[in-house]
Image (cartoon, rainbow, N blue to C red; front, side, top):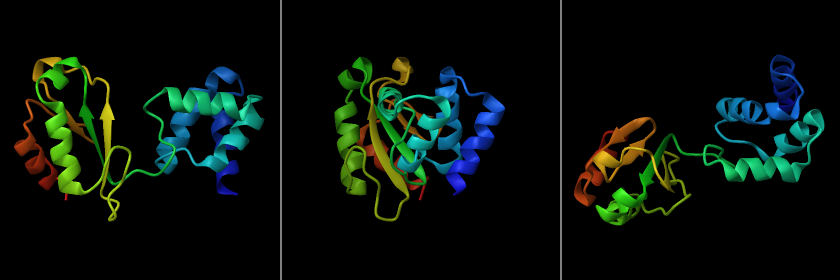
Length: 151
Protein backbone atom coordinates (compact mmCIF):
# COMPACT_ATOMS: atom_id res chain seq x y z
CA UNK A 1 0.00 0.00 0.00
CA UNK A 2 1.33 3.43 -0.95
CA UNK A 3 0.43 5.02 2.39
CA UNK A 4 2.41 2.51 4.42
CA UNK A 5 5.49 2.88 2.26
CA UNK A 6 5.38 6.69 2.34
CA UNK A 7 4.86 6.79 6.10
CA UNK A 8 7.64 4.28 6.73
CA UNK A 9 10.05 6.27 4.58
CA UNK A 10 9.07 9.53 6.27
CA UNK A 11 9.46 8.06 9.76
CA UNK A 12 12.89 6.76 8.76
CA UNK A 13 13.84 10.39 8.04
CA UNK A 14 12.11 12.02 11.02
CA UNK A 15 12.48 9.36 13.71
CA UNK A 16 10.01 7.20 15.62
CA UNK A 17 9.53 9.39 18.68
CA UNK A 18 5.96 10.44 19.52
CA UNK A 19 7.06 14.09 19.34
CA UNK A 20 7.52 13.59 15.58
CA UNK A 21 3.74 13.29 15.12
CA UNK A 22 3.14 16.86 13.93
CA UNK A 23 6.01 16.91 11.39
CA UNK A 24 4.83 13.49 10.16
CA UNK A 25 1.23 14.69 9.78
CA UNK A 26 2.52 17.75 7.92
CA UNK A 27 4.44 15.52 5.50
CA UNK A 28 1.42 13.26 4.93
CA UNK A 29 -0.79 16.26 4.26
CA UNK A 30 1.76 17.82 1.92
CA UNK A 31 1.89 14.59 -0.09
CA UNK A 32 -1.86 13.85 -0.24
CA UNK A 33 -3.45 17.26 0.33
CA UNK A 34 -5.17 16.01 3.49
CA UNK A 35 -4.69 13.26 6.11
CA UNK A 36 -6.36 10.12 4.74
CA UNK A 37 -8.18 8.11 7.42
CA UNK A 38 -6.25 5.00 6.44
CA UNK A 39 -2.98 6.65 7.47
CA UNK A 40 -3.98 7.19 11.10
CA UNK A 41 -3.66 3.52 12.11
CA UNK A 42 -0.36 3.21 10.28
CA UNK A 43 0.99 6.28 12.08
CA UNK A 44 -0.38 5.04 15.43
CA UNK A 45 1.40 1.70 15.10
CA UNK A 46 4.69 3.25 14.01
CA UNK A 47 4.80 5.96 16.70
CA UNK A 48 3.20 3.82 19.43
CA UNK A 49 0.34 6.29 19.88
CA UNK A 50 -3.40 5.74 20.01
CA UNK A 51 -5.53 6.72 17.04
CA UNK A 52 -7.56 8.90 19.43
CA UNK A 53 -4.46 10.90 20.34
CA UNK A 54 -3.64 11.41 16.66
CA UNK A 55 -7.19 12.55 15.88
CA UNK A 56 -6.98 14.87 18.89
CA UNK A 57 -3.91 16.55 17.43
CA UNK A 58 -5.39 16.68 13.93
CA UNK A 59 -8.59 18.32 15.11
CA UNK A 60 -6.85 20.73 17.49
CA UNK A 61 -4.66 22.30 14.80
CA UNK A 62 -6.55 24.05 11.99
CA UNK A 63 -3.74 23.31 9.54
CA UNK A 64 -4.71 19.64 9.29
CA UNK A 65 -7.43 18.63 6.85
CA UNK A 66 -9.38 15.41 7.33
CA UNK A 67 -10.89 15.42 3.87
CA UNK A 68 -9.68 16.58 0.46
CA UNK A 69 -9.80 20.30 -0.27
CA UNK A 70 -10.47 22.08 -3.50
CA UNK A 71 -7.73 23.43 -5.72
CA UNK A 72 -8.04 26.78 -3.91
CA UNK A 73 -8.57 27.14 -0.17
CA UNK A 74 -10.49 30.28 0.82
CA UNK A 75 -10.21 31.34 4.45
CA UNK A 76 -12.35 34.20 5.76
CA UNK A 77 -10.96 35.67 8.96
CA UNK A 78 -13.46 36.11 11.77
CA UNK A 79 -11.18 37.65 14.37
CA UNK A 80 -12.49 40.60 16.35
CA UNK A 81 -11.26 43.30 13.96
CA UNK A 82 -12.53 41.43 10.90
CA UNK A 83 -15.85 40.69 12.57
CA UNK A 84 -16.40 44.34 13.49
CA UNK A 85 -15.52 45.47 9.96
CA UNK A 86 -17.92 43.11 8.17
CA UNK A 87 -16.38 39.64 7.86
CA UNK A 88 -19.80 38.01 8.07
CA UNK A 89 -20.97 39.88 4.97
CA UNK A 90 -17.78 38.90 3.16
CA UNK A 91 -18.29 35.27 4.11
CA UNK A 92 -21.95 35.34 3.02
CA UNK A 93 -20.98 36.92 -0.31
CA UNK A 94 -18.40 34.21 -1.04
CA UNK A 95 -20.66 31.43 0.22
CA UNK A 96 -23.52 32.67 -1.95
CA UNK A 97 -21.40 33.06 -5.06
CA UNK A 98 -19.89 29.58 -4.73
CA UNK A 99 -23.01 27.86 -3.41
CA UNK A 100 -21.13 26.25 -0.52
CA UNK A 101 -20.81 26.72 3.23
CA UNK A 102 -18.00 26.40 5.73
CA UNK A 103 -15.95 23.24 5.25
CA UNK A 104 -17.51 22.44 1.88
CA UNK A 105 -15.93 22.17 -1.54
CA UNK A 106 -17.48 23.23 -4.84
CA UNK A 107 -18.70 20.46 -7.15
CA UNK A 108 -15.86 21.21 -9.59
CA UNK A 109 -13.30 20.80 -6.74
CA UNK A 110 -11.99 24.32 -7.41
CA UNK A 111 -12.78 25.97 -4.05
CA UNK A 112 -13.02 24.99 -0.39
CA UNK A 113 -14.40 27.59 2.03
CA UNK A 114 -13.37 27.98 5.68
CA UNK A 115 -13.89 30.44 8.50
CA UNK A 116 -10.80 30.98 10.66
CA UNK A 117 -10.44 32.71 14.03
CA UNK A 118 -7.54 35.02 13.09
CA UNK A 119 -4.89 35.38 10.41
CA UNK A 120 -2.93 38.09 12.20
CA UNK A 121 -3.55 41.02 9.81
CA UNK A 122 -5.97 43.04 11.91
CA UNK A 123 -4.76 46.31 10.43
CA UNK A 124 -6.23 45.27 7.04
CA UNK A 125 -9.54 43.86 8.28
CA UNK A 126 -11.57 42.18 6.97
CA UNK A 127 -9.16 39.67 5.45
CA UNK A 128 -9.75 36.91 2.92
CA UNK A 129 -6.90 34.49 2.28
CA UNK A 130 -6.97 32.46 -0.92
CA UNK A 131 -4.23 29.84 -0.85
CA UNK A 132 -1.35 32.03 0.40
CA UNK A 133 -2.61 35.33 -1.07
CA UNK A 134 -3.91 37.86 1.47
CA UNK A 135 -6.68 40.25 0.39
CA UNK A 136 -7.22 43.05 2.90
CA UNK A 137 -9.92 45.64 3.49
CA UNK A 138 -12.30 43.35 1.65
CA UNK A 139 -15.95 44.27 1.20
CA UNK A 140 -18.73 41.85 0.30
CA UNK A 141 -18.69 43.17 -3.29
CA UNK A 142 -14.90 42.94 -3.56
CA UNK A 143 -14.95 39.32 -2.37
CA UNK A 144 -16.80 38.18 -5.49
CA UNK A 145 -14.19 39.84 -7.70
CA UNK A 146 -11.34 38.21 -5.81
CA UNK A 147 -12.72 34.78 -6.72
CA UNK A 148 -12.57 35.59 -10.42
CA UNK A 149 -8.76 35.61 -10.21
CA UNK A 150 -8.75 31.92 -9.19
CA UNK A 151 -11.06 30.31 -11.74
